[in-house]
Image 1: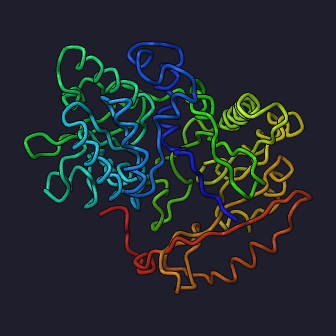
Image 2: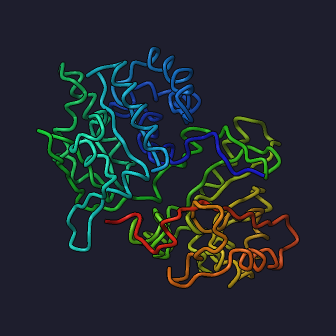
Image 3: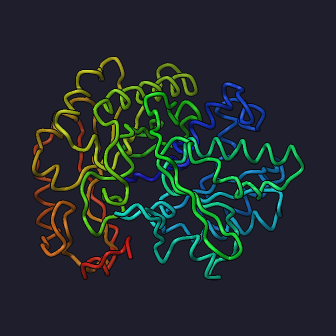
Amino acid sequence: MALSSADPASLYNACRYAASLASKAEGAWGESNWRGTRSDRRQSTLLLSDRDDVQRRLTPLLVRVRPNLVLIGAMSICFRGAIETAKYIREFLGDDVCIVLGGRHATETIYRDDENRVRHHLASPLRLIADGKVSSCFDIALSGDGEHFIAEIGCVVASLEARGFSPREAKFSLGHLTTTPGHWIAGTIMDDQVHTVCSSGMPLDYNGMPSPAEMFGVTTSFDVFGGAPTAHVFSDIGRGCIYDCIFCSERISVGGPPRQFKISPHRLCGQLAAARRVVKADYGENFPVSAFIEDSTLLGWNSALVAQFEKVFDPLENPVRLGGQATIDQIVNNPALARRLGRMGLDIFSSGSRHRAQNLLEVFTRTSPPRRVRGWNARTKQLRSCPKPESRLGYPSYLVWARELLKGSNCFRP
């Protein structure tokens, strides 16, 4: 049973606003290679898994498109691959391309502290470049919300190229983008020093954001949904979890608090409806539809938000098989909520704790302090013993071990 995806869901999410400008033929994006159909846009977005993928899939794309802007998203586990990919692109296109790094790794390692000062973890890509540990393959690193920033930096690159300047010079324009909506930090290297610019904090209008499925389509399918096309959908309740567990990279102190959460069920309902429209249009009227809800914990596991979702989403009018995420304690402590969601079409929960050493059988549950350790087997049995609704609701669990976490160390902040 697998929950792996062939679609670069996070990149689609970050690029959806720029893609919408392209689809409406607005501005520089309307003149780009993204101005066509979602199928056209999808051809220039890749989920790369290894060096062979770079040679086999990326090279023909670089030859065909000759991009002046390349956006790379990476989690920490993929950061080495992001570096090698950026180096390859730089060797291929030279100074004719601006390379921007975003995604989880940049967001988790470049951040503002309690006094609103920009801080860099030891693994910050900018810090690594400044220290000479990584080549200067990235022109800009972006931490935080990317939707409007990506749209703006694309316009900057187009303007530079039209005036005969290198796209790489976009890094000198970061100071002019501070009013770009979203909470973000953008940084670059100048004279071997790290320079960062912070947004003014103008909120994003998540209610007006297009869905990633509408902009890029749906090409993946989780086998737990019987082969039905699986869309990645978001309630946009926030970038991380509602809890602040010290060992988790999605904790609230890293991802930030929930935002515009009171109408997140309406946004989720809209994205599910969009996913269904896209699958019907691209696959056929009677094709089954599935979706995985990418909230760190589904609607924050909030009873009031689930009640709203029950009011606005009709599973009979929009039959979509759903998957989502919750902590073990959330399900164990409130199985009734899981049953309610099951009646809305939720088939699969992904839950667990994040660690790396698989020989260690005791883990922290996300809602417990690090000093309180509970038996993994006992918690899993308790989870699987929760009564299930009439649907196929299942509770697959996952383990991503990290030995140092059991020492209580803070792995994501210095």
